[in-house]
Length: 364
Ligand SMILES: Cc1ncc(COP(=O)(O)O)c(C=O)c1O
Image 1 (tube, rainbow, N blue to C red):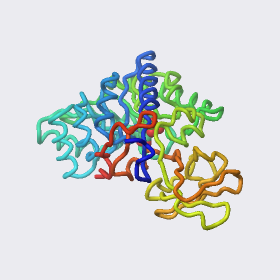
Image 2: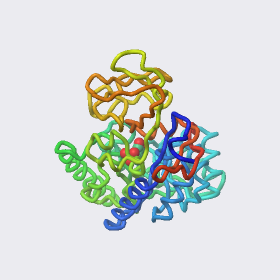
Image 3: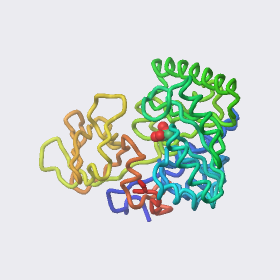
Image 4: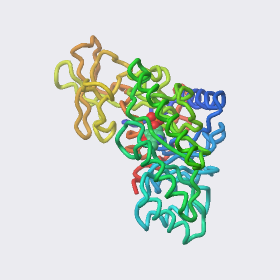
């Protein structure tokens, strides 16, 4: 089938670009001796998890137990659940995953560690643990210094848990720009200090895990880091590009829409709104726009309802008529993948695969 024959809205993945993104990061990881454990919350597709492993990833990362269950189909040598797993039923499901591959969990509380240890003891299976450090985002993670060391010591004492080291997520640094590089230097000093304290306390430090797509190619500047777990890099999106962490030519995911109304002057309505694109605004910007319109770069994707996208053409000389197709690079591709039941892998103008997004909606 040709791309022009797809029903819209259709999320398409340009395989040539995606493969280049994957290879670039695999090469970077090899060059700097990083373990690569890509976060699969972006693509949610075991077939792509498998590809990442074939390109040298040591394992895969997920956020949810449901995603871990799905990613078993990629036959990963190991899975990192980079999210505290709380609750008995969830932990039972996680132990079923751990019967099939080695599992590591990131956590930031003795509460989570104790529940994990109890669940692991019941099935007599050792679970890896990374103690989560808040590197500045203020989301999960304990503070450096005594809180981190106390957490490490307590995890180490718990049966059936194997403390592997430290993890953090530098989500507070959205771009590798001047301000971002200053933050990076602070982050590096913080990790250097935290790992030195950790070692001095006699705690095991096999893994120092971090990494995000905006800082991906700066990861070697973070002292002591030995594992990266980027997610968005496989496709990239307008956020990544806008924040100078990739070029537009590196965006593999886009959504093809059809113009369904031209009733108002200098505005067209396309057949995708917030249920197609999500309502995520552009990161690190006050601009209200929901994607980059490839056929009309100076038009603005200004507003959305659930099934309607409002494209403003006041700044643009372009004219469109009903039935025209517009390809739009979304602000945040990860949430788009979660919204689509199936996506299309393309090469040139040919659709080469239709993939069911197995990991979509796996929120539990
Ligand atoms: C804990 C954790 N690790 C890694 C990632 C991957 O980040 P990115 O998508 O910027 O590559 C995320 C993204 O949300 C995350 O929450």
